[in-house]
Image (cartoon, rainbow, N blue to C red; front, top):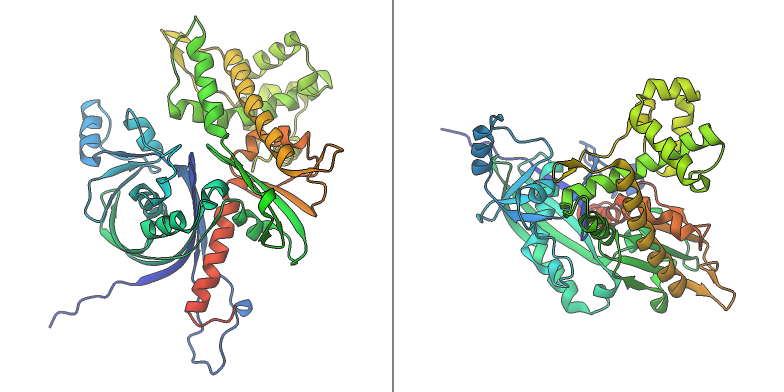
Length: 455
């Protein structure tokens, strides 16, 4: 008699923040229950949460074949081997789809649903959820309690679109990730919340009468949410159709309109430039202080060009020795610039090398255009916050709040613009995960209740 080994089912809570540009998934495993029987219900406070894992990836999806891609790679002399971060998924027996950076690189037009109000009700929302869940959770059988979100303006359009967003994810789904074994996910959608609400759940203040607000700066939209406790104040909640994607498109136009280069940038190129820019700007600011004892913004054009040329042409060891830069300087710089970690080697940070018409695009041009594209959108976001949260006729903004938070990946790029109007605004810890973490905590409470644990 042959015994069939039963596959282990794992229970998890997941916050799924499916943005226009980036998808953030935050997973909390169910807690380990005591092996002995119990007469009294278990208290959540007495059980530490299970393992926590998270990741972000571009929201792009495009149809593609893993087998065909690897065959082409062999033809160019590459090993038929996928990169670790690549995501290829087939859902419910459908065709394979490239997800994330792979879709951006390997498709002429990778779909993200930008500008489509029904994108949250489409199969692509499910594809990104299962791609994130499958890459974070190793088990073949997954039961997941999910909370996700909609932009404030979309959320306010009514129950039908929220129901559609829920129905797109709910149910039993089979999927194959990166050519592996077929896996099964049972999805329970606990709630669809407003974007921004997740950040307040995760990092906001307790108290029913505490007024607080959050500015969630995303890929295509920026959401402002103000609450008393967790109760939203309707006229202080709104959406601006501006975000990181606008800066990327503006940057691409700068390069395309320059007579020396005349070529548009691809999505993954603008993404790389913006990510590098925040690190490079922080490093240049440190060098400016060391070389001229002035902030970067106060340098003359000639001084700035000298700082950039010196940084671009010297190795980290030379810069550190000449300017007496220490690891302590780098740790302080990381704290000031929201970057998680910086070490002496980061003194060598460079933009990726880009060419147009056989000519390398100069670092000075890339810095100037990237900075212009960020500040242009940043000023629009600050103006939106001013209009939404202005207090009285004095021009003060959001001063009637106990706490104002900044969330979303746009925090890294636009916080300096918003701070000119709201000096007290506080960035969430790891702002790109703030909403997803709050959603996951909400979903985790529902998971505990299902397990009979008193929350």
